[in-house]
Length: 121
Image (cartoon, rainbow, N blue to C red; front, side, top):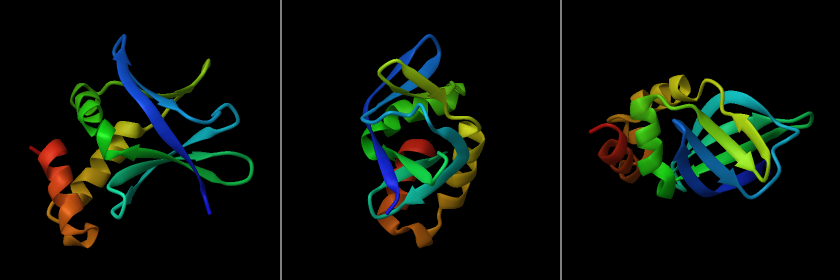
């Protein structure tokens, strides 16, 4: 099973979106890829370390601030204590994923409705 990191807090400071995590991120590098978990209604940004991938889980609760960051193309950073990493290529990947979800019943009707209601209005 892949390791996952939960976002505890999200906020915008100085034109950057910060996603505060529950686990260290220092040994990880951005994977520059976003997946969709239609069962949990979340997006997943991949981080890599020397052994495997780790999922940064972007649950529905943070979508409103994610929408603001998307509209303004704010850099997205993940943080743990003093550690900070920019999620490189976030917006390009996110736009691609959103374009695939729009009207696509393969993701499940409820996820499509939720995503279209927040991101594609």
